[in-house]
Image (cartoon, rainbow, N blue to C red; front, side, top):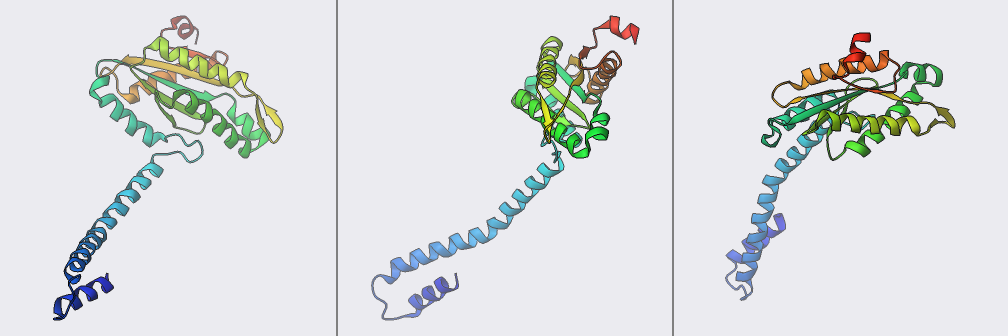
Length: 228
């Protein structure tokens, strides 16, 4: 930019400048304007990109690469406030890795981390484009499904459970049996908050674990509730 400015100054004060000086002045002036604009805009773009990156890091669980608890609540509230989801069914699947402490105790925490990544892969593969998925606790995952009936959510939860329980998980050439238990809740959007939906699903999850694990329970299975 300094060179451009010098050339422009020379062209202005020179009395014997050739005819090409005038178009050169225009070119150099344009370059100066562009350089000035870039100098003003670039810091803003860098700051915006940094802010976006920091926000993404703050809302993402580094191990699973799913949303973390904070990100889940933020994205869920945005989804539920979307006009297209008002007065529609919304479902939540809450799932937990069965006997996860046993995995850590017998095979080490590295195996536990590997198990979390393995489970996360199935969740992302099935729900990437239809729900909001997160790791909200140590071995606990939540999936929000806007515009999903209870039966549809239960069907998807069953598919996820089956895929996990029937696939072989290996860590350092050791086969480790993994399964998940899940609770499913549902309400018309506006009749329950995301925290309430999670609380309802958590009760079903507890019931699934208390009655055998490796299963999916919904709140309308009253016969199981009376036995718990």
